[in-house]
Structures are given as C-alpha cells and as structure tokens.
Length: 173
Image (cartoon, rainbow, N blue to C red; front, side, top):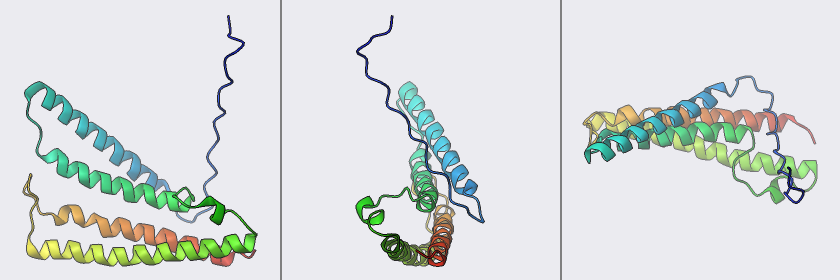
C-alpha cells in the first residue's frame, strides 16, 4: 500500500548537451573513466593485501598520485568545454548577452594563458627530471615517466581553451 505522505522523488536534471566541436570529447571522457577505474582497482587491491597480510604494495601510492593527476587534468578539460567548472554563475550567466560574452572571453582567456604557461613549465620540469635522472622512491623508475604526460594533458586543455575562446570570439551578441 503506497504511503500518501511520502515526498515526491526529486526529478533528475539531464546534463546540458555537449557543444558542437570539431574534436569530440571522447578522448577526455575515456581517459577520465579509465583513470578512475584503474585507481579504484589499484586501491582495492592494496586494501585487500593490507588486510590479509598487514603489508601494502609500495608502488600503489606513486601510481595512485599519477592517476589522480591524470584524472584531474582529463576531467578538467571536458569540464571547461562543457562549462561545468567552478564559476560564479551570477556573474557568468547574468546580465545581457554581450556582458556574458565579454565575461566568457575574459575568463577563458585568463585560463588559456594559465594553462599555456603551465604547459611550458611542466615540459621544463619533465625535461629536468629526464636530464637529472631522478628516480621514484618506491619503485625506482625514472620520474619523467610520470611527468612527461603532464605537459601533454595540459596542452590538451590549452587547445580546448583556445577553441573556446575562438568560438566565443566568433559569436556576436
């Protein structure tokens, strides 16, 4: 017998459709899903081994940190394009269309400059790690194996932001 006083379920809102893009967001989406799946499996395996043997895998922390960074950069790229990143909606979505466009150009331009600079700095860091021959503490592999992917993913975000700025620039209010 149904309860007449039960609250109605909260309706789920469908996410907004992806914007029309020349290059699909599938790369970032799959990178995010695979990184999260690998992170969950590695962490679960470490928890089970630690529970059963009172020891843990030394390599899981290094791999987990790397996967968290990849997950963050991959998801961040698609969040920028889908306009799902953290922002002050009262400023971003308020006012006239011309004001919204100006605000989007400024915020996307600043983010573009930040990630372009970050790409350069991360590339220099990876190159320094390669030249110095740094190795990871737990596994002993070269640290540039981890860090070489950071400028690549940062460049992906830079390219996505460049596309957003170009699309916004072409739109007239």
